[in-house]
Image (cartoon, rainbow, N blue to C red):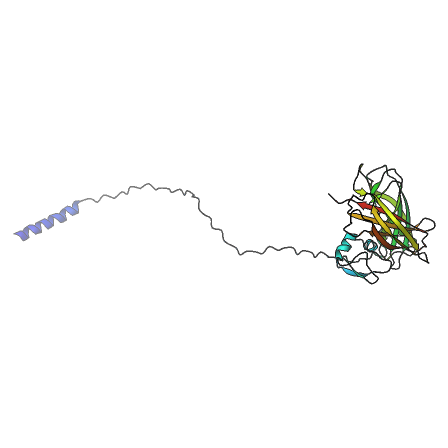
Length: 331
């Protein structure tokens, strides 16, 4: 009996399945979410490159002065040697600290702290403009006297006379040397071996033209520059010469000077005392000069002895004049 019931139940299930209708399944579309990308700040990766060496410009070597030695001759002094090579006397003294300028003998070796660079045989002509003077009251009368030396250079003395009634300082003149049969023409500045040119006085300016120079030449000079001396100026001290002796040589090409120099006011203190010896010819041409300096330190209230020789560049010496200058210490 139970078997019959199970059979009937199974048959009924089959019949019901055959009578049912299959409904199509409808899929409901789901809404699609559209994503919008929002940028966020982030660290940007930068690729590293190997370092590149930055090229540097190679410095052009600057030519340096090569010192050389000069052998002192009988007619030489330190001032003249410094003038010849276009350097200051202080620079020459500094380069030769163990040499006493007043005890130099023939054959002394002086170190010249420059490289000698002779000019070309035909230098380019220079156009020079006259520098306006610092004052219009001082008037200079100029007389150039030039001599060719054994080395082939030319030294020029320019006798400058102060025609005003006031002293002037550091006067200079432009000297132009021109060859008579060549295109050589060169202008240089001549300087005063002292600082002060008193009113009415005449003192030589000097310049040296390095060799080679033409054997035949003409020289011209024109005033360049000067400074007025302030009123009530106290930088310069009066000097007196005592027992001045001048002895000309037999050939007239040199003169020996000796004596003593002292400050007019013995209570004053001087930082320097200079003597400028000027050799003149019979017709008042400058034949040669020499500057003497009192040894330092200068004793106060004492006379200082001096003895030195001035030489002529060529003509015979007729007379010798001496100019003095003393300065107070710098404050």
